[in-house]
Image (cartoon, rainbow, N blue to C red):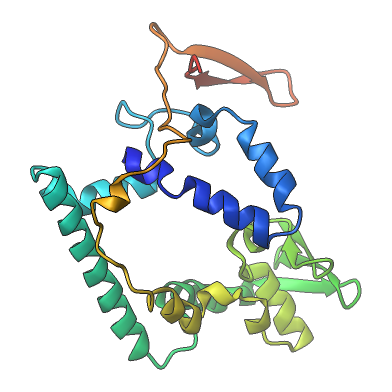
Length: 244
């Protein structure tokens, strides 16, 4: 996994600096951060006694039967696995007649079955208040400067949440323009149309500039932090501190 951690690091920074607005400032900001802290941006606590993520867990599970191979055979088997996955997903996408991917279609179809429970009050063309039928819960939907909802799902997932769908229904609009292009079959096909060349010995010679993260859990019991909740009482939260 150390190879996967830093082999594309410099390449990614080069793309960021060259192709994105304010890329040079972003690269300077990233390089100023201690690389050992990168892995903690989303996962604060250790899982299974190790600092890991869902992506690493999936890769470890996929390559579970390959761990006993020697390094060169391991890389070859990983290449075969990736090529097979690309082929299967590409052929599945090419044979599909749907506009959206299976994942997006399933999730948005679930929203379509439920958005009738909500009532929309339009303030104007770009702002609305969405409530449950009883009026107990409410959310604010905005279209400018970008689509957003107070539930934060459109901002995070780049697709319309159930409240945006209710708002579109009230205005007689189609919600499809608010679905990001990454969820369309065309984008998925473009992703898996790439060729994956085999790993050569020359590819293994790299200049390490960003090493794998290092972390260690402090000995003893976890520290308890009291977080005020606005009332007279407080709730407890256990936090493992890392000496990095």
